[in-house]
Length: 302
Image (cartoon, rainbow, N blue to C red; front, side):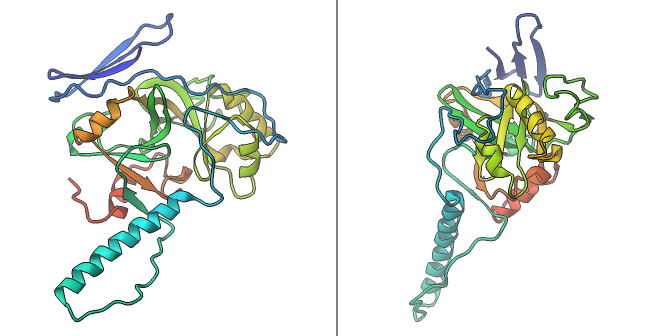
């Protein structure tokens, strides 16, 4: 069991790897809480052979029927409409003679973000000021990849890459040198090799039909070390480009109810956003945290 322990004395991450590797512990500044007990989760096992002509889709614990359109955009319009309605109600109370028969339709732009009440697959966890001083999680933006029965798991999006896969000598995430020059980003304190894939327009259907990638949000997929061979095969077939992937060393994981406890304690703000906000171009961006807070409205930036 891998775990992160935040006690009254120190913030300690204790990681238990495979039996042949010793666990390592990292200490962080004091926090007055018993939260942050992260754990090792089992990502859906992916086959390593691509089925590019198959219509099958990967199934995981939180898979659900997909809608023809992006339901998150629909919800964002509802949220925007509710905010506009509140603004109009406030204006009407100030001027009782003002009557609005038909309020104008509410639209959302290409980039949007808003808070939501509960974590869900594809949402973001925005670190609050309570995590200032906790080096790994301070001002982080975490994308939740799964909400499986064992607990949520995700990756940190806004830590810059310092080395390539080749420089890190990571053979797990490379097959025949296909991705050796790709940057490797820090995804979290728990050991696992993961990657995001966001194929260019026209290629997404092939990625979806391959049967080895999980769609996180519309147009954005993730894979594990078990499916990196398929990713390399698709690059060699020119189905997708090597630049359509972002690779991560490590991930974040929580026990089943642990994340909800951390949210209630004020460590995370839960948000939904458009796919353009967290596209591959945003991975490693140190300004992503500030950008999302700005999109969510007038917020204190500490």
